[in-house]
Amino acid sequence: MTPPPLIAVAGNPNAGKSALFNALTGARQKVGNYPGVTVERHVGKTILPGGRPVEVVDLPGAYGLDPTSPDEEVTRDVLLGKQAGERLPDALLIVVDASNLDNHLRFTLQLIDLGLPTVVALNMVDLAKRDGLELDAARLQKELGVPVIETVAVRKRGLDPLLAALDELLLSPRLVRAGEGPSHDPLLLQLRARDIAMAAIVSETPVRRLTHRLDGLFLHPVAGPVILAAILFVMFQAVFAWSAPPADALEALVTGLGTWIGGALPDGILRSLIIDGVFAGVGAVIVFLPQILILFLFILLLEGTGYMVRAAFLMDRLMSHAGLSGRAFIPLLSSFACAVPGIMATRTIADPKDRLTTILVAPLMTCSARLPVYTLIIGAFIPARTVGPGIGLQGLVMFALYLAGIIGALLAALVLRRTVVKGGGGAFMMELPKYQMPRLADVALGLWQRAMIFLKRAGGIILTTTVILWALASFPQAGPGQKQSDVSIAGHIADGIHTVVAPIGFNKDISLALLPAMAAREVAVAAIGTVYSLDAEDEGQLQTLEQRMAGRWSLATALAFLAWFVFAPQCISTIAVTRRETNGWKWPLFMVGYLFTLAYIAAGATYWTAVAFGLG
Image 1 (cartoon, rainbow, N blue to C red):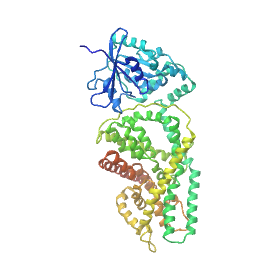
Image 2 (image 1 turned 30 degrees about the horizontal axis):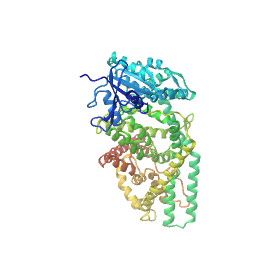
Image 3 (image 1 turned 120 degrees about the horizontal axis):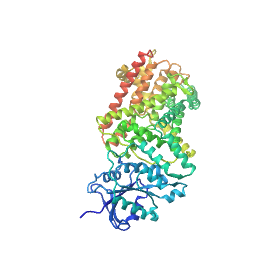
Image 4 (image 1 turned 90 degrees about the vertical axis):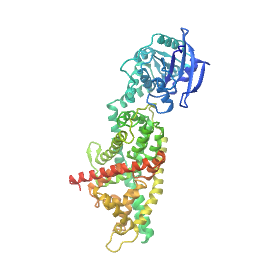
């Protein structure tokens, strides 16, 4: 006996699919699970106007044909005829939300390109009209090339013409179009969807028109990446230009307070601990709070306006070429704040290889903990001059360091996906939020939270590590004519490390800072500050760390140190969370090994190139 034709109901989540399915099938439904997966299978029957019975299956909501969950995987497999125990649908009923048309049309375009006989239900047209949006279903039908029927599923409006269109379609089904297939590029899909949605609009509110115009600019394949690069460039210029007055004031406060306390305390261990340990170490890190807050101000504003998700679409194509899943963008973006939450955010990536690749390259994204190191070295060795209208050399170098981290992550992902984690990345689909003005209260709260996190780190792990380093660097005491850093326990440890890193241009001061910096990257600044304070001949005046470094490093060494920090995984917390997320030590040890190797090669290449240009 020939089974009745099968109609699959598909669409984005929250498009009203289930409501339309219930309206079509009524009580003639049964619910079970798809074979092999715990995903519910809703199947019902209805009668077409010609009297022919058909079977209707309500597919789980999806954003695209690149599955990121078991639900989306079932939807893809049913539509492609790969789901065990499920036959290929004879026709496709796509449900779209009329008030969110351009977003829902992305998946619609992919589904239409499958070549199955298709009808589009333009659902929730009543809500769209209530919000000031009126659409021309006939024009949308012309643009899509398939029948489009207006429906209001919850009120059972539009069911008769919808069933008539399905009946006609099944009587004369459209053949699969040879050579065509669904696009997986989210940016191209978004642009096509936006153009089609714009063509179907009869009237809309000014706010919706503005959204479309902004998307036309920000998602443009040429203008979009240029705007994104310009925003990032301005952001890093601002880290130096805007932070200079508050950073200078904070530095003067810390230096002045340390000098005053130093003058009030008698010589001895306690004075050395407070001045050389706390003020010269932790104080050297705290002065970078303005730069960190300015960086997060930009990030919070971009998130609050709705632009950040647009940036994800722009980056997705580039990331896919590198073998990264489109879902990796948000975790990698989070890693700009800290790699720990970034790695934890990879839990949203369903494919194990995609997730593992993202975890392994997340430490290459330039986290906020690197900012004190970058700012210190750039401030000490890069002249504060302009290289063009409104373009500072220091901000340009900072931008280049962040760019180097991004390029390094993409290249590392490409190599990993072709070797130890073979596979290719997939695109992703997500809703584009509306543009809006950020709430100042939310921005202020976000900045306050970041400031507290930074200060707690300074008062916790950085203080503890600095005090331990101070103790190691203070004993045994140096005799007449000796430098404290040469005779101390820390100095002897640094001698051993220096034999390894001397070929890449690192001096003994850097060698001493590398080990404690494993606790947190900012500790490198505190470690150097503590050692230089202990070695200082002028005990009456607490100098800035930049002043102490000025005559002790060459420019080639400083550049090599920056290159090292672009790649080195100097954070125990990152290693610990990687072990937890990968359930073992294999991948964390691999990550540490390959990142330290990259850091060593990059630092060495930078140093010897700089020496060749006479900067040594």
